[in-house]
Length: 130
Image (cartoon, rainbow, N blue to C red; front, side, top):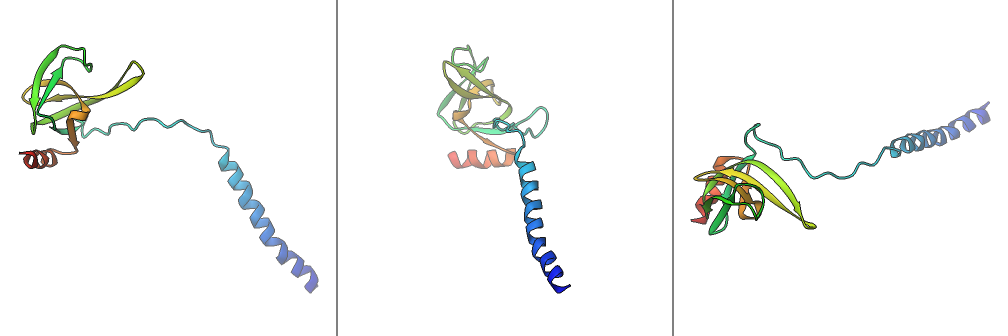
């Protein structure tokens, strides 16, 4: 009788191992989904965040394109509201553009603006530039 109990006890770790392996195999068969660019999480439906212009002079455009007519300008340290972020693909490359408004409104290349979650952070960063 002791021999039978011993064989049963020895088989339990093997059964546990098989159960774990079969569960792992089931979860490994999930469909691979390509990585998508992160979605902008807006503070509200109408506002993505706040930005601070980081170049001496920035041209604002009517559309998110370098070929678009100008709609205004912004200067270094100006705090702007960011309403939309758009990635534009042209000629094998891509640029990120922001729709902003401040003293003027329009599209500006994101590389010319530091983006912050709230106005207080943006104003603090703008103060450090002056």
